[in-house]
Image (cartoon, rainbow, N blue to C red; front, side):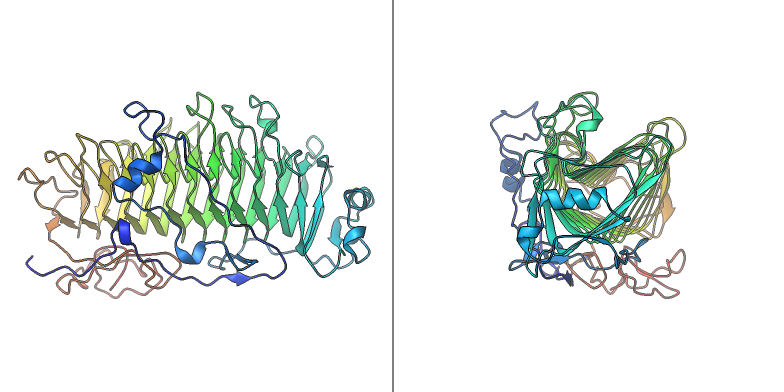
Length: 553
């Protein structure tokens, strides 16, 4: 097309959105930053003294969290917006056992232990009208059901010397721990051995037969062992086939060998309306190896279910794989649902900057995977395990992801995975390897592609296919470029694709809960008459005719 494209916010000058946050007064917040010095992308090809950010920024990649998801205003932290209906609500703690008599001096570790010993199933705090921190010298050992309500004013600190809560119900006697309106800070299991899973969870360790509910709470600066193959969860570690449910909570600057914030083994997880950002998986080599998987979240085991809704997983770093999240089901059975969620600005040093998914039945809807970086497969990687695995994505934006290697900057999918990509926008993903190709979709031969927009993906190597390595079944798709820089015809990403240079806008807030990219070419508006979803990524209704990609203009 000859039409001049409007200005677009490329990686080096991205426009950022504004979201609403719930404000909760009374808890002081700290601004936190993770240093990436010493971590190396592509360690086989670069000197160990280089930082991954050196190469990322030299290639025009910008890390950063969409404005609405970040931090605090002044000294008052902001709870994440309510996007999805919470599966649990805060418990009414009227009549609870009380810690303190109304003054800060009355709220001590001793008074908290007394309340735990005599509790009626609920504990509240009466420590005055200002925020108050109780610093522990040893972990709180819990084996009975309990609701711990901080009232928005209480911080429990491990003082960088001890885990905060160890929740271990009796054998085959289910118990539930609920923590709400409370902050956990500076918990530490850093000096425990990295060779055992029991060393994870510096803020909370949830043992087998325990159910954990976390509501409107904060987890800052909790630290687990630096290395270890299976030790995980700087903030929370969940073990066993019961469920951990997290609603309206924030995890920042936590770190552990794997799962910088959250670690799970054989555990079910629901993560709703929450923020996981600036966490670090400090191990190396992966599994087998010494950890480093899942910068924000790490989950391993068999059969467990995992759902994420209305959340942000942003700016986390893994020294090995899955900068934002790593989820593996070893027996190939593992429902994985991601809805109305942002996966943004994460770094997976070896592989999968955003998401590493293996052995799962994955459904992703109304979500954005953007500005993630890795040596290989910047946005997301989907692998198989024994059994039958699926990937279904509807109304999803995969944009501005970056890989220093040769393929899959946007997404890489094993050819044995079946499923459908419908109304997806895969744009401006970039590979910089010397023999780079397949910058939008690498693999995925078992998928269908329909009503989608594959635009402006880039690579350094002038030969081979820029966008896709396979031609998928499907219809209603638009793709660009039509020729690689060497002048060869590009492989169609799907049968019957239309090659058309469609002007597209920046990745920014166009309404809804996630950033999106809007096509601005009147020639493709509502050009499709079949397979239209009822709503687009933002929740805007589509008509009987619709536009390719995740959103309607």
